[in-house]
Length: 329
Ligand SMILES: Cc1cc2nc3c(=O)[nH]c(=O)nc-3n(C[C@H](O)[C@H](O)[C@H](O)COP(=O)(O)O)c2cc1C
Image (cartoon, rainbow, N blue to C red; front, side):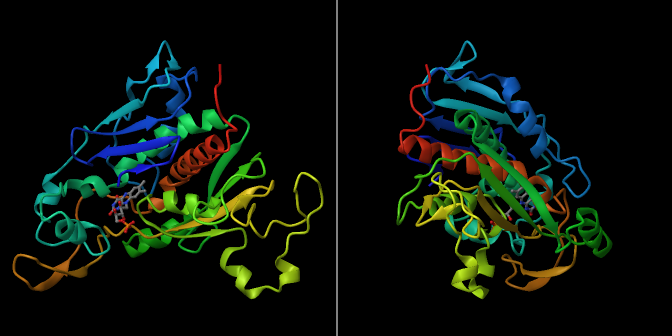
């Protein structure tokens, strides 16, 4: 459903053009220092404003409703709300009969019988990722010296981000990208051999970020072209560190003491001004179509901080399951 995690457990709620979006976080230990200012850096990193991002801007001041008292977590569930103020729903009302190709409009109407809030992508919207970022702020604090960092590796196949973006601007279209995440300081032993491997838990959560199309750990798909002797990471020290890190820090589903390294592919924004075709569900005819309204030209530009957040809350949960984070007072 809309919840994830076993001990550090989050539930997100809200729609893009409803009154607010929000998150409930259960399982955070009591006594963790937490105030509104702690969220500023990461929330600002997710905000649009840069070239290639949507003109829709929200203040995104986190409303901490419960679970924090005197700037410390209480051990009770933490509820955080973000108001939606800058909405323009008429863009979507006009579009109701013509579901956007590549977006969730068509499947949402089928699955929820037309009762879904379709404005701005409703509950499917990238807007809800502000809630994931909030959970990430708390999870990063819980992780202490474990550092989670994400960067954009390429846009539209170009390592030069400006060049990649310009390709889309010139084509009056949208474009995708690749974002990498690296985590240092992880202990050996997180994860389980089968269904709850580190890769499984991360992939499960990472695919909840809208527009993610793929994930690879370490050398990923390139591993299929290598010899075993090339791909094997030679163990060099008792702390598990290896000469190479082709496996990306996970062996047998378990963290192995090396840097965790993985990359995700973000698709080009489905809402493109370029002319396409779609079914008009009222007339039953396929017709020419192009998206109006305010959209990110390149979603990947906004993803690094979201990916860090998702990674941090997955790892916080795995750490708690291993009893490596417990009482902090
Ligand atoms: C930060 C962020 C911003 C996004 N902005 C837009 C946008 O402006 N326009 C759009 O069509 N999709 C945007 N998306 C992606 C859609 O939400 C997503 O493509 C859609 O819900 C369908 O899901 P899927 O792509 O995972 O299949 C954004 C995603 C994220 C993570």
